[in-house]
Image (cartoon, rainbow, N blue to C red):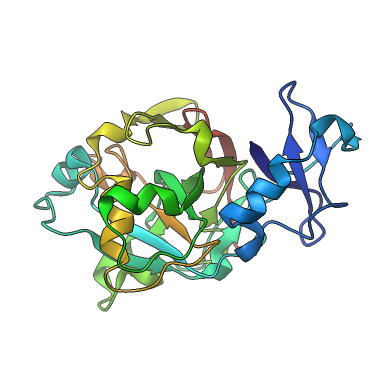
Length: 281
């Protein structure tokens, strides 16, 4: 299934994309898509609904984040071998974990706001993993049984705040609109191998990131199992699993987002995001 949320910001409705590409209104069956609403059990209840019985939405308009809210927005740093190389970093021996604040969540096609004082706002196309079942001390063999589905994430980052201002990476990752998610939550049954997905990002029409998830240092199985040793993952949690090479920080000379720039991000089978960078008011 491909699930989505459509409508004006703050007034989104849950929907389902049918096989013909028509948006179907799910609001008569579910309140929204978040938390326990995207648990594996909740998704099975949605799966039992015949899409043809759902109202068709002729003009869905804006597509919102595929999740209304997230309990936690986790990220994995330096998880692609070529990306680690372009930053001059040694490949990590264990997954690097950090958070984006949940307030950065936004729609896949919403404008990305370059914050006041930012000089190094950067792009990062990533495979997002949505947890569907509590996971605590799960093995790698069991890990994917706890995944509800997958989505496209742009882990927008302010590199000066992330790297040059001390402390943890979170403050460079969390400004409003720094977390575009969607357009769809694609259920795990439609992604038989999360390590075989092409992903790319175009900046102003030029492809700058072009890779696939086989370049990940730590696989989705390894990430979920590893994280569950230290914390309980909950339904609706999102894990952005790292970005491939081609970010602005890795370019020579470096290149960062400026108002008017456009981004187009695609992950195979998970849809496309399109964003415009705008100046903060």
